[in-house]
Image 1 (spheres, rainbow, N blue to C red):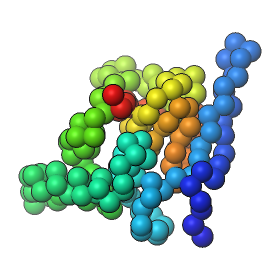
Image 2 (cartoon, rainbow, N blue to C red; image 1 turned 30 degrees about the vertical axis):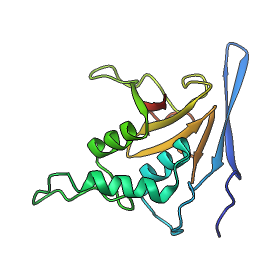
Image 3 (spheres, one colour; image 1 turned 180 degrees about the vertical axis):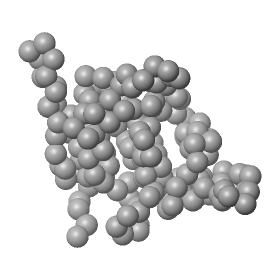
Length: 162
């Protein structure tokens, strides 16, 4: 069953110093025309949602950059439906006007989590998580599931629209 964009998948309340903040998670498929389980199109979906670019235009952008990737015996090209390499994700982000903000460095450990206290309150962002990316707009996660792991999932960095 397909959910309508904007359906609330849940929320997470985080309390610090007596003050609480709530982070909502809303279902959003980014306008993807393909609706099937176990789809690994999070890069195309997140950039379509955060940039407002039609989903199929983001897929075409990924395909264009994937054609320039080096193919080896063990590594194929990026594919919007299967997975996108970091290099190609960065190229897509730059093409859509996003800039990178790292939140983790070598040897620092996890310093930022999917938690309303640790992420920017406003703006259009794409969070880079372990094996996943998702759109984060004005304190609301837009994705097809809740990626927060109850506030324990590490954010390696995020792209912000300029």
